[in-house]
Image (cartoon, rainbow, N blue to C red; front, side, top):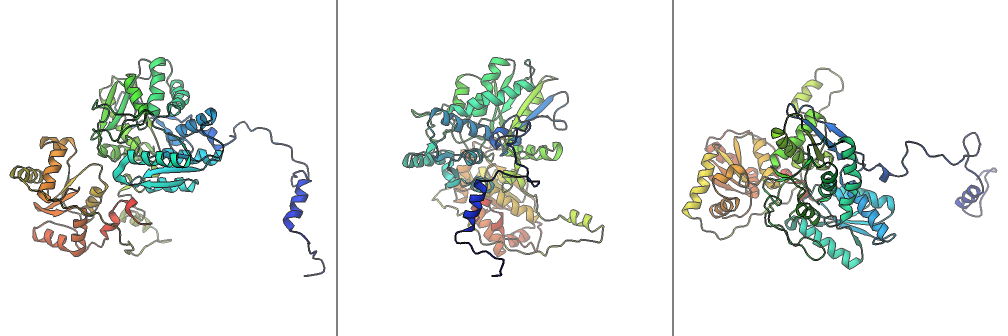
Length: 539
């Protein structure tokens, strides 16, 4: 210690605190700082930026003579339409006293509502617990945890109704506030007070001919549709849903308990790839729309269309949305094909594409340079980048096929053999449009560069052979396996996803293709387990 050093007998932090307590804030020029006057374009907090999302004209993808617009909800601060619902439900609960200061909030969600609630709860100071099925994209759970929420996963086999039951049990046990977005009228009310008013502002005097939306929780559809019915009665309300899961179109009633919660899965539900767009039950809010006869038409959309249109919006219009946006836009295009010339159509795009990076939406979108990109780089000499090929994939969990005791009848054998023969390809993959393990098998054959066909047993094309259930029963009987996918090579059954991956790893798949004259890319170095859905990977 030198002679100029003063040793303090109490902590420096106490000295600083005492000085700051008795001193006004100062600028660098030592003049006192006055309280800042409100800035005209500044927001008091992030929550006041919710809403007022833009309506954008579609230029390249719209049919000629049709004015097609999208409402881009990705412009909300956390990237989805659910920012509105989260704010509406929390503030309504604060107002009526059902949510107490500091109380934990809990909700079951496919992700977007959970992300939005994490933002709202972070800003307002509420702890948040989110319950989510394991098969929803990994980005979603990481975003929620990044925002301070706790994320509880439920088995994918129990679908949306399973995560709802788990959230209800946790809320009851711990005394937490359960948002109940599928029942909560505050979900619809905020769309009545914001989304619908924005639409009427952008399409005044009844000039909007069609409003197209998915339903999901029913909040957007109910909140907007009831306003348009009263203030723009000429506007037709179009609901879109998965083609293979016609919950609305079936007309079959959903059972509800005394609290308005759906009882079990709807009988018409089938799993599909559009996350959060249509759960395995009909929500009370959506049922209200049906009861009030607000829907003019229901448009079915395939999973393939949903992925295709989301990508086309990005590549041709520069509009970045998720799979549900592609699905809703596909429905809007169906309407546009038969709409009168000059019709004005508005389609909801619920969220951003960034929370689908680990889903099939981004299949074949590589992180590394393609050969074409590398060739462009090589046109100048400097700053060349190269990455040595390596395989660092860890062993991943596999999907085990069940082996039920089944007897294949002659009719079932002929049915499956007929479908394989009609496929006109050496590799035939029996699949479901929504099945991520089917997509994993497809990726392997794409990498092998072989001629293959996917036979979606839940598609319209397969109805010529029978119902989905009839084909699946026949397939299970013929293969002694009840799982999907099931793969045939040169007319002979190979196995499911697990067996196919093992056959590739031990070389028997390559030998079988070579023996039967199927051309494929030899020498392919690939760990097929890396092709499995990202949510199955241990972290």
